[in-house]
Amino acid sequence: HRVDRRQRQMCIRDRYQRRVRGFSDMSVWQGPYSDEHDILLVGEADFSFSLSLAIGLGSAKKITATAYETFEQIKLKYPESEQTISKLQNLGAKLYDEIDATRLTTYDKLNQYDRIVFNFPHAENALPHDVEAHQSLISQFLLNAKFRLRDKGRIHVTLKTSPPYNQWNIFSILEKIYPTLELKFSKPFDPATYPHYKNKRSEKDVSFDASNSEVFVIGVPKKLKEIKAPLSQSTCLECSKPFHCKVCHVTAISPASYALHEKGRRHLKNKMDSEGSFYCDLCQLHMSSLPNYREHLKGKHHGKRVRLLGEQYSCSLCKVSCNSYQSLQEHMTSEKHKRQMKANPTKKVIPDNRKRQRKNSENDNTKATKPDNRKIQSKNTESNNTKTARQGNRKRQRKNTESDNKRHVRKST
Image (cartoon, rainbow, N blue to C red; front, side, top):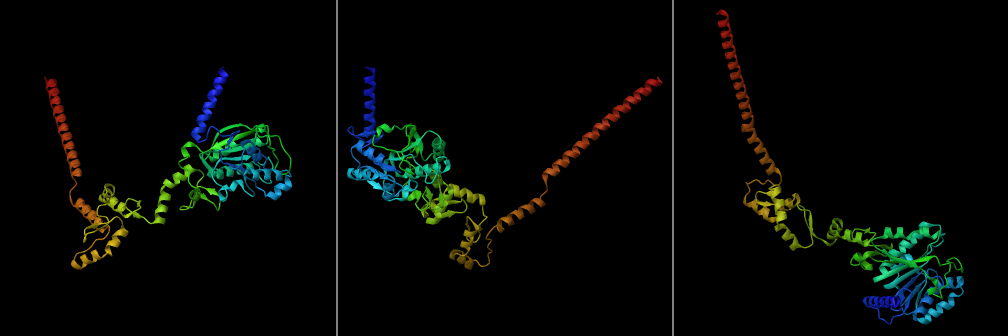
């Protein structure tokens, strides 16, 4: 009775999750794949896995299978592949050859998918002991596949856990890629769920043992789904580098670093310079429009800076203060200043720091002419101290003379 109850609870949970994800209760499942999923299969050898998946789901209309080699090379290497290709085409699958898994963003044929599958990836012309080649293959595939994922999409990578394949260490790859992608969970790969699947080596028509294998389910973290950018803005298709900033000519590793770069001063400054902006030299701020620039000039922050500077960059003739020496020179060449010069030809104009220097020199002269009260007070205190010391010495001398006289009187008596 308890087992039946648990099974009922599991069925209720599965139905609820399917409804939340937008799937109907009548959907067909083959392992972790549904007939309502848009599935992309990458790096297929003889297309036997895609055929087994299509037969299990009952249709191949939402399956897109790709291979790195041409169809002619595949048919020569794997003789049975010709029948599987014809069966898949009859079931309605989309088949493409010469598709590189590390450059998925460059192909216009491909769309957005719910599941992207790469079973037993293997680098070209590399031995299983060549760890760096296989790690670079997997990392580049993941970075490109991320842009082909829909919301709540998943990437499935199947790898062997026996040596030397366990040295590829997909966990270290995901640590470098994080927070672009993260490992959701992993589960053992069961070949029995795909009865028509015949795993083949990439070099020749020879199968291998796939029992000691795991499927690593990878997805986008929940916090970074809002940062996900479209393909045209965040990727450089020429160099296949994700998150490339065309304004600053810089590539970021992850969406988080790309978002931080967009909020940084360097990016904003380059963007303003490219689009044309208004810059305040005094406050060192960029404004995107003229009304914002005028509001900034009337604001408290800018006013405080102007007060601190005082009359450093000011025109005494027009009674105008400027933010910088360049703006003061522009004022000197303006028509308003020229009119004032014509109206007051005898009045001298002090354009820059000379007025301030003159005031400072006057203050220094006044300080030199005025007596220093501190020195006078110190001298007075010293003289008072000497007077008090002298008076004390005189009193001591008097007392000593009186005592000596008394002693002489006593002796005489």
